Image 1 (cartoon, one colour):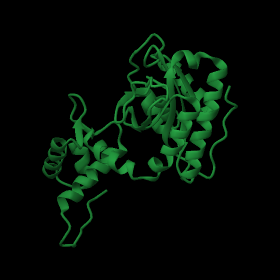
Image 2 (image 1 turned 30 degrees about the vertical axis):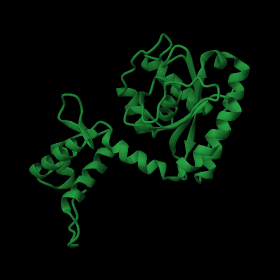
Image 3 (image 1 turned 60 degrees about the vertical axis):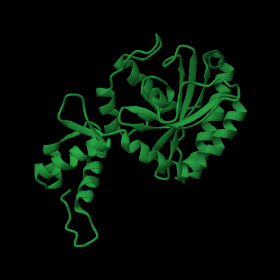
Image 4 (image 1 turned 180 degrees about the vertical axis):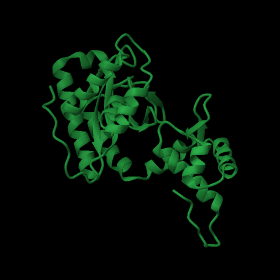
Length: 269
C-alpha cells in the first residue's frame, strides 16, 4: 500500500498518510507497530511516528496495553456515530425498531462490532419503563449478551477464529460463558439457528435475544436485539414469540438495506 504521488496542489499529504494509517489499522484487529505501518506504506519510520503520535493525541488511535502496537481509538467512534446517524441503516432500522418495541413491549437496540466489543448504536426504550443498562455508544464484551455473540458468530471464518482464540472471556454473572469450548459450541449453534437467547449472562436479572442484520452484500453489518427482565424471557412460549418477531424485524431491515438473499436457518425453537 505504497503512498501514491499526488500532484494536486490542494492535497495535504500528511492527511493522506493519516488516512492510510487508519485504513491499515481498521484491517488489523490485533494492531500494528510503527515499523509495520512504515513498511506497508513505504514511508520512513520518522514520518509514520509523527503521524501516529498526532492521531493518538486526537484519540483516533490508541496503544494496545504496554505493547508498541496501535489500534483504532474511540475518537473515531464519535465521528463514525455522526455518520451512522445519516446512513440508510439508521433511518431504515429506527421505525422498524419502534414498531417492534411497541408490539413486544420490550426495549430494542442495534449494535455493531468494534474490535472485541459490541457497541450500541441506537436504542428504543421499553414501553414498560424498565430499560436495560445498554446505552447508545456503550461498548460491551462479546460474551456478555446475545448481540455480541451474534456479531461474533457471523464474522468471516478468519476473523471469527481470531476473536475466539484471543477473546478474554470474563465472568459477569454465574451464567456468563467463560469456557472457550462452550463459547465455540454456542457460536456454532447461533450460526445454525440464526439467533441467540441470553439469560442473565451480562446482568443477573436481564435477558435478551438477538438476530443478525445483513447488508446489500449479504454480510452481517449489525445485530438487532430485544431485551428485558429475565422472567419474561424464561417463559418458553413468550421467548419463542419474541424470537419470531425479532427475526422478522431483522429480516425487514436486511431487505430494505438491499440484501437479496438472506440465509435460511433452522426453525427457531
